[in-house]
Image 1 (spheres, rainbow, N blue to C red):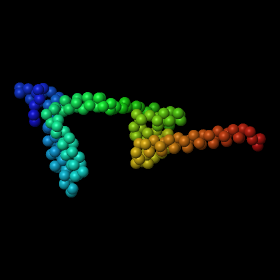
Image 2: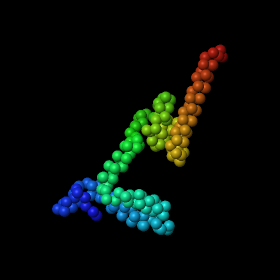
Image 3: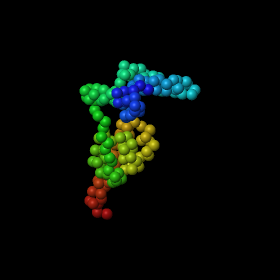
Length: 170
């Protein structure tokens, strides 16, 4: 393993691992891992190809430490306008008693994860988790939205039936 300025001859291994490791070390590791996975019968050739492609893409940055490379990528991301990681949003504790507008807000908010949408669908509407888990996030949102629309329809029918019942004489 190569040393960086943060490592001294008297104190090998001093500093954070990302400061000590170079991209070149990562390239070697990825290449070896790719070689281990290249065989059809004992590995995963598709995974192996992906690892080799990543190693090739990193070669121009081989002399950088992992920390320097991470800073470089963060800088490129910031300049290109890439959005930072989404903040995590917590679901309300009592999903069974959520109001329809609250459910609509959750379904319209991209910060909620697929697993959170699945929780809302399962706990509020009784949709099987396995059904929602097999689909992509957008399909899970649409399934929960369909259940919400169905609930609204039933509420409307119920309200009309009550109103009609009040006008009956029998």
